Structure formats: C-alpha cells, structure tokens
Image (cartoon, one colour):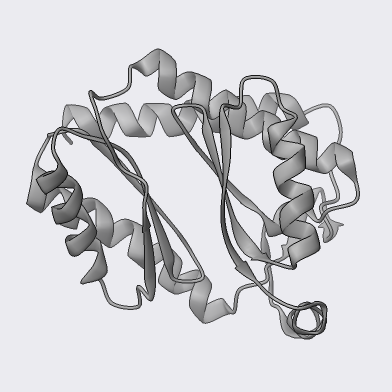
Length: 212
C-alpha cells in the first residue's frame, strides 16, 4: 500500500468517525426503516446501478494511478453511473488524462470533471472537507423536508458537490440547506433531475439497501 493510499484511507476513516459522532446520540430514520438497530434506506438507483457505481470507483483508483502516478490528489465518486472527479493535479494535461482514463471504464455514462490545476490540498484541508460533508448531511436530516438519504455529498476545498436522482424542488432545497452550513464556500449541483411522476415510480420500485 502506497503512502498516498494510506493517506486516503486514513482520511475516509476520519470522515466516518466524524459522521458517527454526529449521529451516535440517537438512531436516525432517513426515509427508510430501522430493523434490529440497523438502518435500511431506499436507494433511488437500481441494484445494478449500485453495483456499477462501486465497480467504477474501485477501477478508477487503478486507472488514475496508471496515468498520473503519485502526482496530485484525485477522488472519483459515481452515482447512477455519473462519475464526479474532484481533487488537484499539477497540469491541464494531467486533468485531461484523468478524465480520459475514467471515461474508458465500463458503465460510465457521463463525467463531471471538477479537478483543479493547483497544489495538493493539505491534510487539514481534507479534514475540514470531511467535517463539512458531515455537517451538510446532518443539516439535511434536521431539515426534515428532504429525504437526506437521496443525496450523496462530496466536499473538496470547501466546495460542496451534491449528487442524486432528485426533483427540481429537492435539488433547490438541498442546495439551499448546504449553502446555509458555515464554512461552505460554494455549492455545485451534480444531479440527475427527474419529474415528480418519475420519482414516484422510482420510489415504488427502488431496492432497499444499507444507507451509506
């Protein structure tokens, strides 16, 4: 395991610890059900899309390593086969190379490349981003007028990216909630917008999965 990989795993563990601390006081019901103390939520993606998203994220780690090595910091998040790329790379050529590598992964249907050509963010910056992600998620739960589990939140350099299959109303409300969180510099919508009728159909057929 490289030092870069170790760093990323440590960061992810820290994010999980922050999230756990925020929710440890009481169980949360995020538009799903609590069974035996564990939470089950309704995922708006098909089971096939969920599997594909996990595969895309795993494959992307190796593909990015192949094209830029240890240069910069790159993170890929996939939702319903839409790949969001964030982080920092040293050149425009590296930015383009990363996007091309991700685009060649099976099942990727679209890409949003938000890589910055800039020095790699510090550990303190990444820790702050992890905290902001947790605060945005907690604010969505507190709001009660959005289904918090329908949104995936990614934060990089204080910029919050919101992903999910949502209606226009849900998209706007979630963005307003995120903007109200102290420390958030900017909110970027990376949504797949559906109609209210499409959402009703999705909720009727969507599989249950462990919230993550």
